[in-house]
Amino acid sequence: MVSAQLYLDRSANSPLIIDLETQGEVRINSALDLVLDHASRWQTFSYTGDYVLSRCIGNERKKEVFPILEDLNLEGYRYNIERSDLACFEHAPRLRAVRTDFFKRSCSELPWTQLTSLDVGVYEAEDIYLLQQCPSLTVLKLRNYQWSTLGPISSASLESFTFVCPKERREEHLLENVFCCFTFPSLAKLVIYSEDSSTTNLIWPLDAFSAFISRSSCALTTLSLSSVVISDVNLIAALRLVPSLTNLFLDGLEDPEGRSPLTSHFISSMQGSSPTHLVPKLCSLSIKFKGTSFDDVAFINMVSSRWTPDRTHAAAIGIDCLRSLVLHFLDREVDEDVYRPLWHLDEMGMRVVITSKK
Image 1: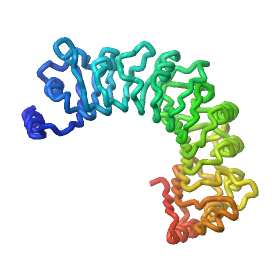
Image 2 (image 1 turned 30 degrees about the vertical axis):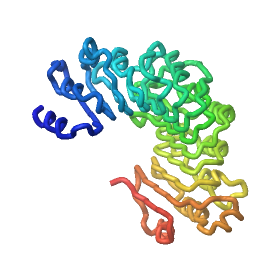
Image 3 (image 1 turned 180 degrees about the vertical axis):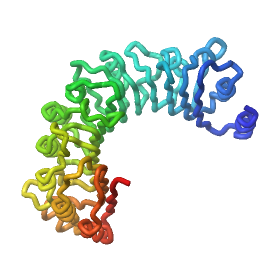
Image 4 (image 1 turned 120 degrees about the vertical axis):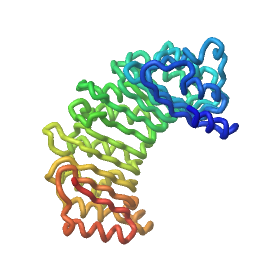
């Protein structure tokens, strides 16, 4: 406490980044009370714990103003953050980013209209309509959402959407409900993954994804899929829907039979010499391959066919140059001799990283 007080005194009027964790009950003269005396200097405030913040930021502190607060992170240990905790930060004119495990439609205390980034857990389906009070959002991350047939809910400014499937969810139509719920005309980045790397609860819904892309009319540039159940045919079909894609990340995918969808058929469809180019603007490809059966030769040929550093040649054949490749084998080793051609591409300018299990 003495060193913390000394730091706060010596830092004068400099903006503060506060990262505070507590366990159990916290006394009013604790570290929490100490940093509250400098609330006007908070630029970032992160709190993890079960103490009710409104016990301190209330009563005589009721009209507390956070004039330079930009980032707010509130999460509980055993219990969710309470509504009264969010209400403590009602007067934060520069608040732009919020992460919290409390997100209720009836919660009107935060300045939702000015937020540009939101990372929340949603426990009641109707609470998602609170997003309609966030017209400035460009980044959204949803966790623990209890999906039902809602929407479509539109966010015209949203550029990045991440959906995290929690460990306990085992709902077959989870992703289908996600895609049916939203319309994001400005979406450029889509990230989907599971907290526990389970594939049984993230089944890819091609028709719902197609409808989402059509309804949104967005130009997706980054797609990241982790622990998703999808066939090679559906993966190819999904990528055909997003010709604007420049960055593709595939991690631990499985088909319905438990095999990898990164088959010889999928790899051949990615060939730069293919008459109908798949993701013609692709510049960065990152793969974590689950399984042992992988067509190394076809993959090397595909990557080589996308190395088109000469812009005139690239324009003539209709694909952009692949500039970065990251390949990690989760269940097998790398044959250095087989992959020698890709090391040559690395020497020529492509970023090539190929690794395997330890």
